[in-house]
Length: 135
Image (cartoon, rainbow, N blue to C red; front, side, top):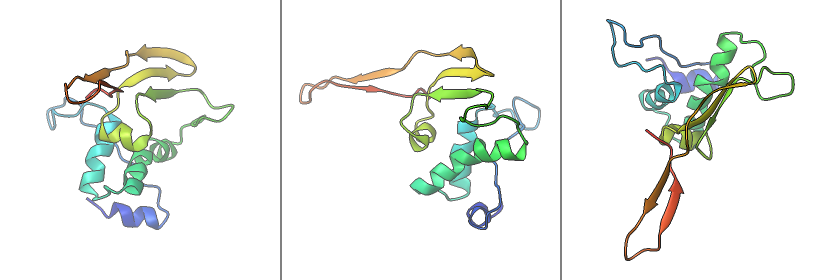
């Protein structure tokens, strides 16, 4: 593992990814970029709020730059390929391995998952309902 925080601080575009998905060398890969970000933040010792957000960018924004993806982003004129996650922000998305609610590719909805809802029912507390990302 290289010095990720130092490279980022120096302005180097650092991206995370992996290529091992159910292959003979490493059978644990899932192709899940939130999993990659989660592992990366631990290995690179970037567990601060700022570090976690930087690791999210390493699998999204920075990776798109490395791959020279045309039309990447949320601005007008981009190709409308994105994932809507059941999370308030990037930190929660990685921390809880957010449920992917909808996936669009070039403006077309290609996958969707129902929201996950958890309810805490304890006599000494009022009923608490929270939308929980899946794991």
